[in-house]
Length: 544
Image (tube, rainbow, N blue to C red; front, side, top):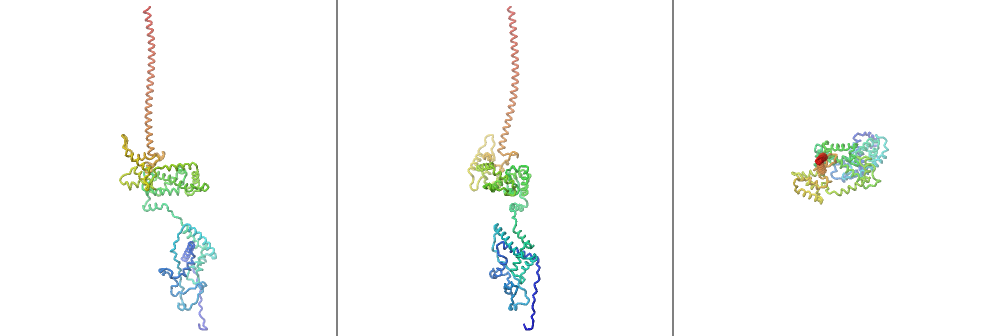
């Protein structure tokens, strides 16, 4: 510069205060959320990632990553010295000044996060608990470090200033400090972020049971119809039987309490439990709840389900558990604490323990266990009719063979003997004056009286107690025999009354006859005396 000539000093005005927009606030919140997520996943801070990305060579990435912007690739970019940038001083390089125009804006920089998509993290319950614990500790530390901020407005301004990479004074340390400052609980932005994180972490588990029933109903456009014939305890189609049983079990486990005995459900204060069960079950299907067959099937399923539920509760929470460790509160939501204590008291009674031992011995005496898997006898009979016996109705003997044949072992010895007796009884010709026995009668005669095969298969009306007005086939036979004997007895009684009346009449006749004979004898004696007197008088007259 020539002497005596003063150069024009360029005065640099301070940058105007930047007002954060809604987009910048939302972007800052997203950055903060990502930073917290990295902390929970065990990844280093965002600052470390940014530093590692900046010093990473541009040739380390794959070829297709060249489309990403790098500040060093642009023409006219100048090397950056961290120490000068940190102090807010820019070194004067004449070479670069001569090459570059006088008015040129600073090149923007884009930070590319490292490729972490290849690392797949598997979330488990244990890892989630550890992440939550680590997150709480990191948030506490970050909050203490960010307590130096004065107001929420300054905190938001620092966050917005940290996200503006066009500023020549802002550094990565200031940016990290801005992120740390926004971690105060009093910041509305941070509170919103925490609420979002809490909503993302504490997602309730969706209901998974009954989903297939809902999908089937949506596919059909209507609820699955349930049709139960008279005398049968389950629907015939297997899909109806399966969904009917599974939905009944779900309702039982979620809404119906478990009492110590089935008689408790019939009490006046508990009558609504059965009605509630049938109503909830009818809400899932299309069925006639006014039908007696449907009501009987629902009640039968509830009766078996509550017995099985009581057994499972005992096996899980009572059997094998020391007396001082048995629960005193209910382990399930559908049972109150008082009801649970009643169950525990029943299981602890000596009478119940003796009954359990007897039932275990009786179960070992079962001779004809079913071999139908999870299908009921009614559903198995329906499948057999549809697949094997298409044009001919199977007999009771055929159904007995199908339902007692194991896929692995075949027929057991007891079943083979029973089948032989049935076939021999069918082949035996009927005697004169007797009708040929049907297959159902043959099976009923061969099987023991305690067998419920015919009732469970729907071949005979369901066996129930006398208050329902129906009895089993064997009971009906005994009842008919008793009626015949009563009629015969009544006939004999009438005959006896007739004979008694006749005997009484004959006795009266004999009494009359004896009276007449006595009168005759008396008159004869009087006549004989009179005759003797006459003879004596006449004899005296002849011999004076």
